[in-house]
Image (cartoon, rainbow, N blue to C red; front, side, top):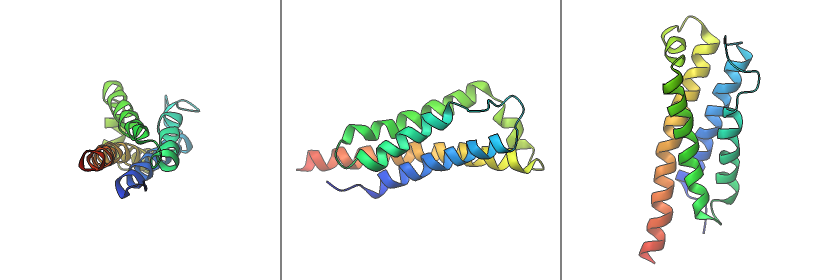
Length: 124
């Protein structure tokens, strides 16, 4: 079984979210931890999806759970709205756009990847 395009896109957007977090760290966003757990929450599933999804379909679920977890956490915490509203503060703004855009796109691509992987099994 080959990796689907949706699985590769899922991993790519998980890494986009990681890049957003790194930009926010480099921009010294107030109240942001030195090493946020989101780096691992998004990065590890991205690596797993990219390397193991062709062999173990269930890994694709990590590509949905991780970005949804980060997105729900961001919505509950709420400070990203202020960074999105202040485009003049370029680093935090770009980092937040990449993070939020990446996790939304990763969740969508993850859903498509799971759908494609399990539809192939049902058809055969």
